[in-house]
Length: 421
Ligand SMILES: Cc1cc2nc3c(=O)[nH]c(=O)nc-3n(C[C@H](O)[C@H](O)[C@H](O)COP(=O)(O)OP(=O)(O)OC[C@H]3O[C@@H](n4cnc5c(N)ncnc54)[C@H](O)[C@@H]3O)c2cc1C
Image (cartoon, rainbow, N blue to C red):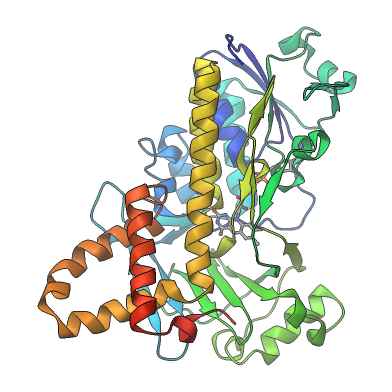
């Protein structure tokens, strides 16, 4: 792939596609987004980490949409993790030193996606509201737009295939499936049940709350006038809560001993959506005339709300690679995206096996005992804060340090008490 790229077709119009398309349109690259809106009544991906705001001199500001996003979102000053009645961790973004702003947003995803698509349209990207169809070219690892898809944007492509096809179809993963691309799946087999409820208890306004349940864990994301409440549970535990996803969700609300407390009066106000298999990394992200972006390239466990950060930061990197148009630039894009996904997979692993918060707890105990720990603790704490806000989530140094601390702490104290059951 070594050529000047002047025309690009984006399959799917989610945040990853819109980010790249807006930046490319500003460089004069002619782009078309084929977008078939999701038919689901609600969309996951409502909690943003602060790096969404400042990455590359803030992504949302860079795209010119922060004011609009703020107008309909919930201000998010931090995150709260409850692992039991007595084990609670509160992260306040403003306490983390560094270039990040001390906040993020919880966004109604339908509005957020509309904002990004409208910004793309305003910047000059052609939006085709239709399903994009592609065909595999026989005998090679190559694809082309089908006739109807090509014809729907004839004023941009003039009947010629675009220079590049970007698969941004999210978890549909159109090209990886068509081309049979290899991917590594994560080891967990959980199911996420997700809906909006009218209210729940919240320890801190605006915080995303991550709470360990009898089995699995739940998220509570406060949105204007309601709360997004999801439960992530090992598939083997679900049948006893009923045959349908609605019954399972409602029964978990009534029967899980933790949800009974934090969501006692919660009433479900939407249908329930179910997701399975959300740990995956593609081994190859680009080929002759095509590239994968966002969830199509890979996705991570939702526990630390990192999906949009990875997808939108990837969109910024992709625009740079397309601007250069060289094999080397696409290799760099591939390397950085895979590395970022793998870092979050590792962080999620430490969450599930208990080592992540065991290390926080061990650190707090050692702080009381040793002066050297007291002196170095603020530095460690700041580094870990930067990992979770996304500022250092792909830094080898920070992830290496997290790994070391997780392993060291597990030798001091058994992490099983902190693990997700
Ligand atoms: C349970 C769960 C909870 C999550 N929670 C969070 C969270 O709190 N915070 C966070 O940051 N991330 C979260 N995520 C991840 C986040 O939702 C995704 O990472 C993000 O939406 C990916 O963006 P994208 O642009 O790659 O794809 P998407 O947002 O999926 O957009 C792809 C679009 O392409 C369209 N499309 C598909 N096929 C075609 C086609 N052939 N033609 C035209 N259009 C097509 C789809 O309809 C869709 O609109 C969560 C994920 C899950 C599974």
